[in-house]
Every structure is written in C-alpha cells, then in structure tokens.
Amino acid sequence: MAGYLTTHVLDTALGRPAEGIAITLYRVTGNSHRKIAEAVTNADGRTEAAILSEDRFQTGTYELIFHAGDYLRRTGQGGDEPLFLDEVPIRFGMAADDHYHVPLLLSPYGYSTYRGS
Image (cartoon, rainbow, N blue to C red; front, side, top):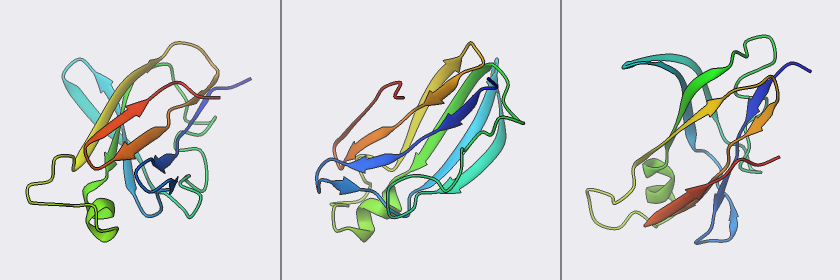
C-alpha cells in the first residue's frame, strides 16, 4: 500500500465540523519549508481528497498549517484582536508507507491533535 495523508477539523466549542478552513501542507527539511499542497475543508470538516495523495507521498517531516482565524471570526468566536489562535501549525513525521490521518480539534482558545485512522 502506498502512503497518503488525510485531515479534518472539528470545532469542539460548537460541536460540529469546521467548514471553510484553509489548510496548507509543507514538507520540512532542516530549516526549509516547501509548500506542496493547499485545500479547504468542506461541510464535513474534511478536504475533498487526500491532502497528500499516494502518487506524491514520501516519508519525512511535514507541517500542516490550519488557517483558523478567518473561520473563528466568521463563526463569531474571534474575540478581541489579535486572536489567541489564528494559524495553527502541526509538525509531524511520516516514517512508513501508510495512511496517516492528522485531525485538528479546534476551539477559540485551544486545540489538540492525534494520529487518527
């Protein structure tokens, strides 16, 4: 099986999927970041396709940037500027050809992640 990467975002404050969050994926090598993909979450809080498909998959270190600020403002959760959370980076490694799923559980003042299935 070739590896691939998926993600989704759940709004834990409102208890629903987070629609309309822009996500950027970077490959990290040392101090270098190379943008390799962009996507936006749908009504289910997921991207329409794998953010890193099987044909582009390589093991290594990656960083997902979730551009959460616009979503938080749009849903009335922004609060005072500057926002406590605006861009949420998650750096992680993929060491094997496998399915990696990296979700974001988001609220205006905190977030968590895990390796999902």
